[in-house]
Amino acid sequence: MSHAGVVIQTEPWWNRSIELQALSRVHRQGQTDTVLYVRMEASNSAIDAEIIAVQKKKSRINEILMAPLIRRHDEGPADIDIPIWIGFSALPYQFPKE
Figure 1 (cartoon, rainbow, N blue to C red):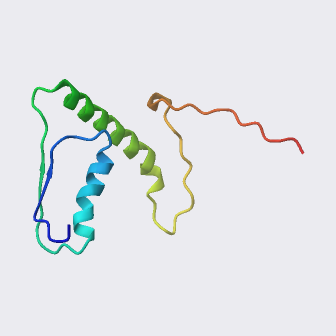
Figure 2 (cartoon, rainbow, N blue to C red):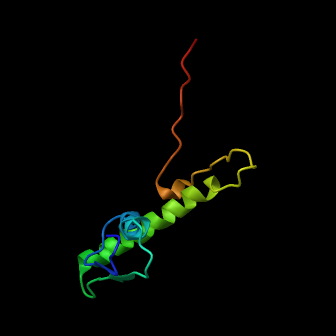
């Protein structure tokens, strides 16, 4: 992979982060030249369209959840409010009795 000049992805994956990780692997392994990345998508495939829609939704949820965590080193810890519309809900936690 350290000498790859072209990366061709022939189908979309459910998780866009995995796609990006595979592409990044080419650069991490000593690649110094420019790499051409080709991502193929079927133009009239219901399955590819659904996978791409799921990718976009997962990416947006990830952006929302990670945004409060990206902080400068001199800032304190972040309080995270998870929006209910994402599909998560806060479950009441019962502290053990001492």
